[in-house]
Structure formats: structure tokens, C-alpha cells
Length: 174
Picture (cartoon, rainbow, N blue to C red):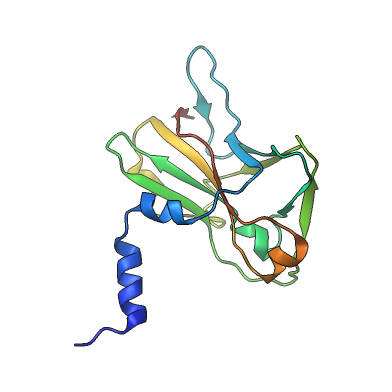
């Protein structure tokens, strides 16, 4: 049986370690992403029905960021949840239909934050790579990922492409 070049490429891509693939994606220059849940009495708490994420412009110039309601911004924000055994569950928005869809963006001034809130237990919106019930531990590590694709619209609207990732932080889930 002969493998086509495309099939072979897909097999190799899937078999690459995640870290190797992450290095290929450019850093989303000028933007930072953080889950906004500071420690209280030495512990961080996170309510999965209301995860606050701050995307901030750390550059000296304005930066355009896709709005979430359009297809360009719908998939930008995702989460990775790591259990104590090292298992990582990815939480991404599900595909959906678009009654109205056009490139739409916010413009963040230098230093300006954008606060997004995600209800990760809204299973009509969010898809988990593994069932949430598998994460039985009360304390888990979580990070937010903000990724923008390079395409014609991002070039035209000057929306930078790449990936910004918050640090892994340990949270007690409520």
C-alpha cells in the first residue's frame, strides 16, 4: 500500500510532540493572556462556569483583535487543563453555523486590556478533548491559549497572527 505525500505529512504532524508544533507557531507579538484569578490565602480558585481571561496589549502601538461573535474570533480562545498525572485536556469552542459573518475586531490601545469570560461547562459552546468528568481532581493546572490564524482577512484588517499563552497555574475548582 502506497501512502500519498499528504497522508504521510498528516501522520507525521499528528505524531509530532505538542511542544515541537507549538514552536512552529509564531508568538502573538504585543499581546499577553492571563486567567484573572489571583491567589487568596495562598490558593487560587476557579469557577468553570465563569473563567475570566484578560488579553492585554503590551506593545507601544494599537493592536486589532477579532471579536468573538464572528468566525475569525470564535475559535481564538481555548484552554488546556492538566491533571496531576500529566494528562492534558483541551477545551475549544465547537464549530457552529453563521447566519451573519464578517471580519469584525476591537482595537486595543497600548496597555489596554480586553476581558473575556468563558463558561467552560456550557457544552453547547465548548468541546472537551476528554469528558470533563474524567478530571476528578479538585486541584488542576489550567492555562488559556489565544491563537489567531494568518489569513487574507487578518492581513487586510491588520490583525496580528500567532499564539499567546498564559502560564500554567494551579487552581482549586469550584
